Image: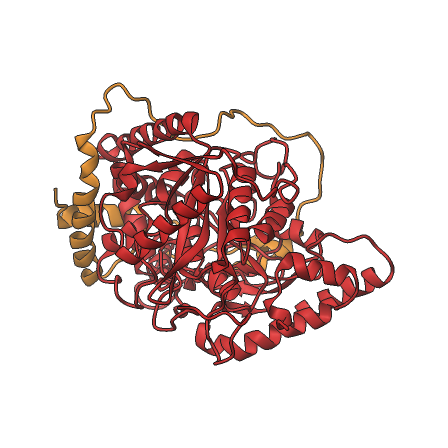
Length: 97
Length: 499
């Protein structure tokens, strides 16, 4: 089953990837070809098979309620592209900047 | 007499303890070796030479003062650049994280620091650990020390090449679908993927969280045991690290495998294995038989679905994990044309910061999770995962370990598989099922095909590391493949030539 350009555009939007036209076309071909291989799965009857999302038999692991010191703000902000007075600076979300 | 950089970790640890050598000498020998061969191998993204010498001096001083130290104290090691290192750039070989300096250490790093390791550098990898050749590094490809025109495997190719070339005595990598074991096989090193939950993932930049596991690479099973000993065990900072007792891995290396039940999964030997690889594996099987192992055939009927299920599950998890890279909190941030609001800034940062393979997997994973396709792909893949896991459960009722080649081929040429993503994915056909089942696996040197290393893959059940390491160590007492060195400078290693 191939995927069309419209699907590629939609998935690129979902993934927040500003892809070029060339990239979109190449990905349409490559994803179609990869999915063709992946479709081998449809040969197996899994109607009675439960899904495994996770292999460990653990649920709701809770940590000890022990206070500890967080990293200093300036250390955490050192990697931010833009910051101001202890906050990360972002572009305006509503209206004009 | 062997050069210092040719020593095994356990030999060096003994000589350090007896104060025949110092950690500064040992570290200098490795830094010199790096200077000598790194121009052709290119295993490292960052070499931390000055910090390494400082750390070595501290260890020597502590030893002088009579302190009892761990066997890893003063040992030069290399860390895959996906493991967060406080104050040292951690790039994941991506433009996205080219300048990212973590404010904390991954738990595996802090545990090795507690043990007194000397970190010589951070190793190159496929970007965000996605790939099987290290060619997906955004910076440069790493070359295989056994043949510089070939890949070292991946994604932990830098770690494997560094160990194979004598630039580090051991290394850590991460294995999501074979990324420790396959480069181990292609570079003649010993490489272990522990059981999911055996080693903390805290501070490991996440690729596929239900599959990722940190594992050691070294030049012997004994050295891998020493490394695993230091990193294994419950970590309160990773709720998926299990509270299962950590055995003494080195003490378990008895040298005997009498009566060991070895299963050969028939579905792993159907097609695509190179004749030279098949020959080496057949010889390894006779060696194991001669050592007292009982060999029998077994069946893992759902093997053929492994790669397909993996290439839904891993991309799906990666698409979620990599959504954190938005160019806002850290990492590459796009500016200039096409960037006029927050939403375009995010989409441009991701498009420019990620390389082709990462984008391909993010797209594939996003597609598989999107409305209308979830049941057909993601849910289906998780059901296949159940079937693959049941196959292993049944096999391990009859057998202690299972055996296959680690990779169907020896190291391939740089560029050879870049144009066909699925051909590249098939490199991991024998290693992927272990990750899907969450069980343990190990690759050891098993011979050469036209001068290129062949890896033997031993698979074990969950928490099967002691058995895998015991078998690997016993095999290495019978064989000398793991002691051979690539010819990087016209100067031979331990006097043994590769064929």
